Structures are given as C-alpha cells and as structure tokens.
Length: 302
Image (cartoon, helix red, strand yellow):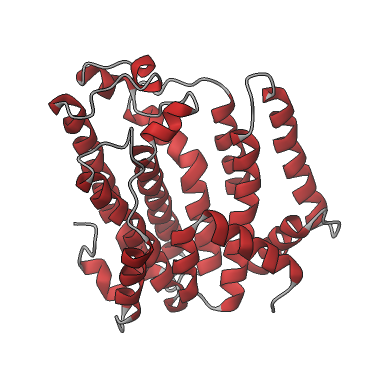
C-alpha cells in the first residue's frame, strides 16, 4: 500500500541513493517500502552527523539519542513523523531486531570525533558499524529460503557486502572527505605510500605517484575480494529479492571500475558510473532468468 509516509521515504531514497533506487525496482512493493523506510532512518542519523560543526558534537549526540527514543515511541504506536512511522511499520512487519539499528547509530556517531584508523581491522570495524548493520537489516526484509541456518549465513554475507560497499565509498570520496576534515584510509597503508593523514586532509597528495596508485589499487582489490565473498548469500535470499541484492552489489562494484578509469585520482574527481551505464547494468540483470545463477560468475566485479 502506498501511503504519504512511504512516499516521503521513497523521495529520500531517490534523492540520496540512486543505485539503490534503481535496484529496488526489482523488489515487490511491500519489501521495497520497508527498505525505503530503513534507508530513510539511516539517512536521518547520517545527516545529523554530517551537519555537525566542531562545536555541535554534543548536540548531535543528543539528536542521535532522540532518534532512538522516537523510534521506540513509534514502535509503541506514537510516531513523531513519516520516517519513524514507516520504520516502525517495517520493523513490525518483518520482525527486524533492534540490535543492528543500535549498531548503526553507534557507528555513525564515531564520525563525531577525530578517529585515526591505524590498520585494516580498525577500519573494517568502522565499516561494519555503518554498513554491515544496514546489510543485516535488509536481509530480514529480503527474507531467506531453506533451513534456518541459512539466515545466519546470509547475514554474514550481507554484512560482508556492507563492508565492500563502504570501502568503495571511502575510495570514491577521498577528496570529498578531505574537504570535510576526514580521512578513512588506514595509517599503515598511508605510511607505506609515504603519506600522513594530515597530508591527505590538506589535499597535499600527488595522485599520479606510483605509491598512491599502488595503495589505491590494493584497496580496490580488497573491495573486490569482499564483493566475491558476499555473493553466495544472494542465492540464499527469497527469489523475489535476489535481483535487488545482486543489483546493489553489481552497481556498487562498478564504481571500482570508474576509480580505475580515473587513474585512482579520487582527490580531485568523484568517480561515478553515470546514469546510463548504471541503467544498462540494471537492465542486464533484468534479462537474467535466474539471478541466483549469477553467484557462480563475477558480473561487473571481476
């Protein structure tokens, strides 16, 4: 059923998540409505952090706490707005646990404080908080077929896909993050490239240097490995959700190709694949009769 509240959430998705907006066309209406609601809630939390100035961090922490309180109230039948109304509906409709929502809120809050990611494990922990949590939420909406043990395995794969997509975001947005005083690239990788976090934030980087390109190439390869590791989970999802999950993976992995095409310069350029190319990828998935069969291959990820 289309409601005013669902339209509000849908508009948020179309405005901020073009790849997912295209991929969600593969979902039946009820599941699409639920994923839009979850995305809109995540967007509220993320936007609150992104708007935080150096003197407004405590106010943002209060905002994040208030979001969770408002969600609890919505679950008790007292929604404070369309996003809370829809999120509470999605949680009830699909039996979604609150733990990954709490993980998400805690994860985005980490951006309020200057954080140095010293190595891949520390960066991966951040990616899990802000992105694996979303993958787990979506798995509950998408549904899982087969024995109950498949649910746990599908969630592991969805969480891996979340990390892959977040790493892709980080590689794509190096320059944009630097403009906001942030650098997510791990210290040990920067050190091997002869760089410091401060240099990246100051945009004092020669993106044409072999050391920079070698570091970026290493992380692109890492992201591709993560995409491959996540693919088996797609075949465990309900058939009516497999194409959407595959489209998200393929669409985001294609950004890695755009990064390569930009010669790993994501300091001055934000790599993207363009609407026409993205639509072509989605249409190629639509033409496949059995999306689960794609798991055996490596579409747009190889």
